[in-house]
Amino acid sequence: MKIKPNFRIFLPVLLFTVIMVTAFIAPPKPVFYIIGDSTVRNTNRPQCGWGEVIGAYFDTSEIDISNQAMAGRSTRTFVSEGRWDKVLSTLKPGDFVIMQFGHNEGSVPDTTRNGRRGVLKGIGDETKDLLWPDGKAETVNTYGWYLRKFINDAKAKGAIPIVASMIPRNEFREGKVMRASNDYGKWAAEVAVQTGAYFIDLNRITSDKYDLLGPVETKKLFPGDHTHTNLEGATINAASVIEGLKEIKDCPLNNFLLKN
Image 1 (cartoon, rainbow, N blue to C red):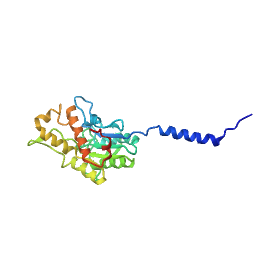
Image 2 (image 1 turned 180 degrees about the horizontal axis):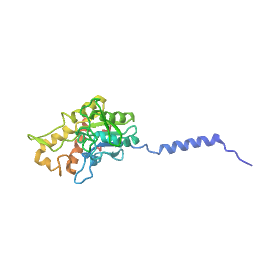
Image 3 (image 1 turned 90 degrees about the vertical axis):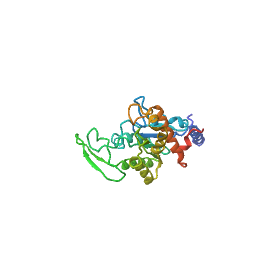
Image 4 (image 1 turned 120 degrees about the vertical axis):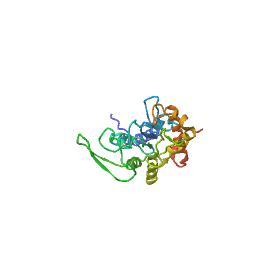
């Protein structure tokens, strides 16, 4: 005799099983994405970027850190090379994105080797149309436009954007380190205010430290050139990021810092 299953008994058991299994599956951890240039991630030792060491400040049992910065990139090439699209493809609600650019944007934007990274200055909507030798067209935008793209794209994904002004170079004038408060640092702050993004004045915080160290001691942090720090310099800059983050009392990323 064929026995028919009793679905009235089976269905509640199935539902109970699904509920119990789901209860024991941990939700995915938020991810702290870092985008930027070689001052953030640099594998050319002894040079080192601050994004490589900042994980020491976070409880990585509660949050993952994904350093997607790449040496030599500007806001423009981070977009044109598809690197931002790669981040966006995995970005989810509750994630964080910190962006620090400004070191590679300064050339006149064109299709030459030197100009391929350049952007238009400021935060406006000005554009410059380019045609590459292979026939590909590109519209170059302002530094602020690219930052707004990162911010707005991240928000659209439900992620939380944080803008950081660029770290200072080892350039002193009359005993004080030269700051970016009249260009890229200023523009980064303006875009953060404009879009409602969190802002870390990394340029100011680290510049204050370099001023205290003075030119001789600061030079020891820069092996080979005036832009790229060693491990000690990267550690100082990572600490500056954390100091700036703690200044933003309502930023949820603070909840994942290690408790001292």
